[in-house]
Length: 81
Length: 81
Image (cartoon, rainbow over all chains, first blue to last red; front, side, top):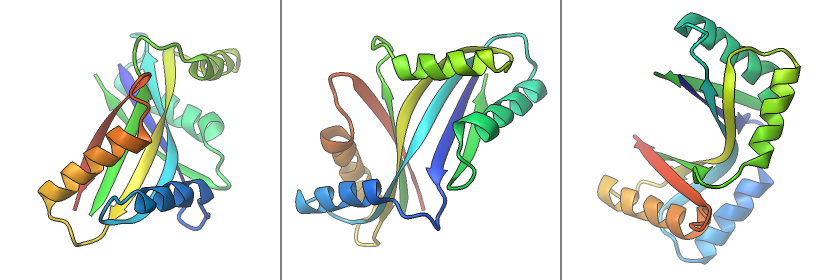
């Protein structure tokens, strides 16, 4: 089973890295960009020992306790067979 | 319109950062993890000036030419109204 965890900065947190990339893209002439924010992305491969419910709980726990800094970041994840 | 760009290392490229996170999670007692790879994630807000086809082309061009290093990385993206 595969799990995809997406970590992004909370809306209220400034993202200077994203702003820099946005400025660079604008200067380079790319059109239509209003805002850009950067986040992290984790691709987890789970072994067959967990069923879907267990896998969901375990991935949520990893994301919440280790992969995300809860002060400034939030996460969402999806599972795929 | 929102665009989400996911950048990950090609399968053939080693990911020491991912391996370190995986090792840490294993040591901390999390179960069922076989592999972990880290990537980047960009959340783009597009202004209303582009229709869907134009937006798709522009986002693909930004991802291909700026957000991704084509030697070691690959990307996928999705659009959302």
